[in-house]
Image (cartoon, rainbow over all chains, first blue to last red; front, side, top):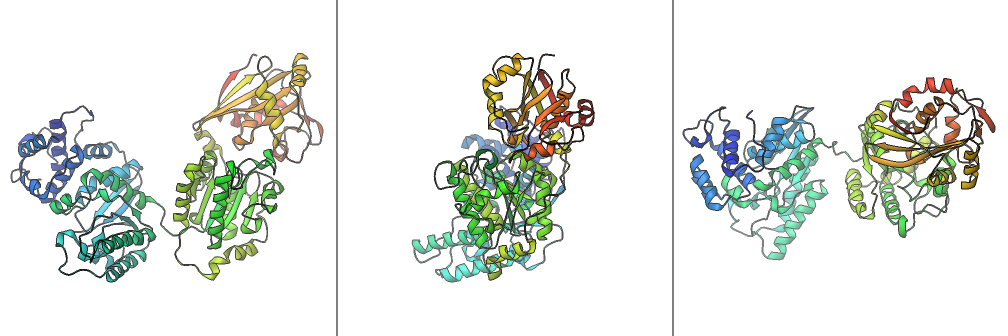
Length: 86
Length: 547
C-alpha cells in the first residue's frame, strides 16, 4: 500500500493525487496527474463511484450526477475542484 | 473521517480479530468499503466485508444468513416501501398510508427472524407520494418509529444525499461515510441482540447515594430530592424492568446485614423481595457475578452489570468479558443516556404472564442468598494492568489532618474502630511513635490519601485504616509488606472486632498474624514481608519517608 501523506497542510493537489493513487491503485512511482478514464485500466465504473465519493468526503463538496460524468481525468477533476473552491 | 484518514487508518492497522460482516444495502455500497474497514480497525478488528449486488436486498432477505457472518442492514425508507424510491420517480397515484406501513412491517419481520441481524436506518426524505403533508409526515415518522422499535440505530437524515444517490446509487452522503461506517461496525461488533435477562446492580453510589457501611442508613439517600434523585429514578426504572420479567440482583462489598438494611427499611422504591438475590461479600465482584449466573442457570451474555466504580467495571469486564458492563452516571445529566442504553439491552416488545412472575420463580429456585464462599478471581493480572503507584508519606511531623480524619471516618477496614483526637496522635508521636499515610494513583487517576497507620514508640500498631474506595487492590498487603521491612516495624497490633470491620477481620486471617482475638495481636513481620512480596510488586512504590 502506498505511503499516504499525513500533513493537514498538504495542498489540494497533493490530497487529490493521493486519492487518485489510493482509489485507482496506481503503481508506485506512477504519475497520477496523467490518469484518465479509458486510459487507466483500473478506472472502471465502480472505481469512478468510489473516486467521486472520496473526493466529496475529502473536500466537503457535493458532486451532482451531471458533474460526476464530466470528471473523466485527473485534469478535469482538478479543474472542477478549482471551480467549486474545494 | 475523510477518505485519506480512512486510508491511513487501514494502512497503519497491524491486524486483529476477524469481523465477518455482510453490509446489506440496496444501493451502491462499494465506496463505504474502505470506511467500514477503517471503522473496524479503530476497534482493533479486521473487517472481512461482503456487499450485496446492487438492488438485491429484497432477494437477500429470502435467503438464509451465511454461517459465522454478522449481518447489518443499512436501510432506507424505500427498502421498507419500494414505491418510495427516488430513483423510480413519484408514484402515479397517491399511496395508501396503511398499506405503506404494512409493507414496512413485512420487511422488518423478515429481518427480525435472522439470527443476530442488526439494522442501521437512514431516515432519508421520502417523495411526495401521499395525499397531503400531514399524512406524508406521519408516514415518515411512523417508518422511523417502526425501525427504532426493531432495535435499529437511527442515523440523522442529513447522512443522506440525493445528489450522490442519483449520481452513483450510493445513498450515504460522502461527508457521512465515516459516521455511518462507525455505526455499522458498532452494531456488527456488539453482542447479538438477544435481550439480556439479569441486571446486577451495585448498591453503594448506584442503587443509593452514599456508602452504607460508612454513612449508615440515615446517611445514604435515595429519595426524589438532592443527591438521591438520580438513584430514585434508577430504582423506578429497575422496578419497571422487574415488572416486565427482567431479573434484578445486587452485588456489594459489604456484610449481608449492612447491605440489606436500606432494602429492608421499607422506605425505598425497591424492596429486598424485588431482587432474586442480594450478594453481599468481600469477594471480587466477578466471582460474585459468576456464581450468581451459575445458580440461576443463565449464560453470562444475558447479564448486565451496573456499577459506578470504573475499577469494578474493568475487573468484571476483564474476568468475564461476556458480561455487559454499564457505568452508572456520576452526574444527573448522564442518567437519560444510561437508562436508554439499559432499556435497549433489555428491550422486549411482548410480555407474558411468566415474564411478570419471573422474579418469584427464580427466588424460589435460589431459596436464599448465594453462598459467600464464592471463589475469588485471581486479580493479579488485572491489578498489574492498573499500573498502580503507592506514595508513602511519613506524617510523623507536619500536617496530619487527613490522617486523623481517615482514622475517624473509616469503619470497614479499621483495626479497632477506635476514634482519636489530634492531641492523642500528637502524644503518641511525641513518645517516639510514627504516623504513615499512603496515596494511591493508577491509570484511572488519583484516589487521594487512602490509608493511615499509627505506630507507638513501643512498636504497637494502634490505628490502621484503609478507605473502602480502594478495596480489592491489595493496598493493605503491599503497605504492610513494606512496613514489615522497615526498622521499627510493628510487633503487634491493638485489634478489636467491631460490627463493621469485617474486612479487617478477613485481613487478619493471614498466617503471619496471631490468633485474632480482641487485644494485642502478634505480627511476624519477617514472615509477612516474605509471603507478600508479590503484593508489593503490584505497585510502583514512591517513599516520601525518612529512614
